[in-house]
Length: 404
Image (cartoon, one colour):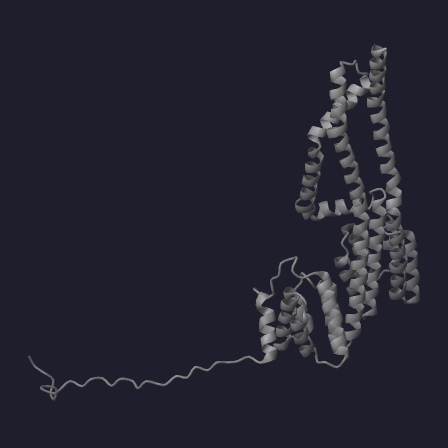
């Protein structure tokens, strides 16, 4: 077998092993400020940050904004203020949120974009105000107006919800009384009457039958109410037209409807005043206010106003067409403000006036409903007395006569 020249008998050379390189592991130790952001951002699981709905409360956001104003006013740079607040937050959720905002701002992004990553906690009104304030250099004044706006809105929401709690308590008290009568009082009388073999009048028989029915099936209305609420919240109002229909009829509910309407006017006026005072145009103000109003029927009325302004018209004609949801006196005040070029001031006055009316309506709601429930309980007690105690008196007379 032929071999290659020069290769025969030559010893095989072993391939040279690559020299081992000494590797040095470099441990990057974050600075103290970086550690704050890392620890605060541990709760962020998506680029936009993911937090459960109940983790960060509205009061946490308001407290954070107020503290941010204090730090920036004291001369602390914005990024340093955010990092400081990411460490100071009382709850882990708000520290995570602020830490994520601080990290995004540190990456070179504007503050409004950092807030925009968390739409669950910062709505479109807030984002656009921060964006405009950063461009104009008025961040602190706008933040202060926003904090006052949030605090006033939260206070009004608590008052309205508190007004709804009192009727629920009265209804629960009446239900408890009915159940006590049906399950305790009536069975005791029924057993007594059966033992004495009395001939009961028709009203007593019907009252006892009704009480027995209530005692057995009392849970059916409660289950039906829960089902209606769930269907309404998770199915019915999911479609815009159905939500519009529901929000319109909410304003027509006796006693409660006027309170909801006045609250919607406060929401509309306060938002308009905030946006106009912050330097936004009328078109942008109407767009943002429409999206901020919770009652979609009132928002639809504002959409009509927005379309009129876009065509070059004024506020009066579209507002006059919406008298069913926007009172005529509110239209008069806005028209006066438009003519004087002081719509922001007029909107603030409207918000103040209607906020006071909501306070009065909420405080008198209990006084209005209490007589209704008192009369209802009184009718039940009188019926109970006639249906049960008269036969009892008759039974006592019979026993007394037999004893004699």
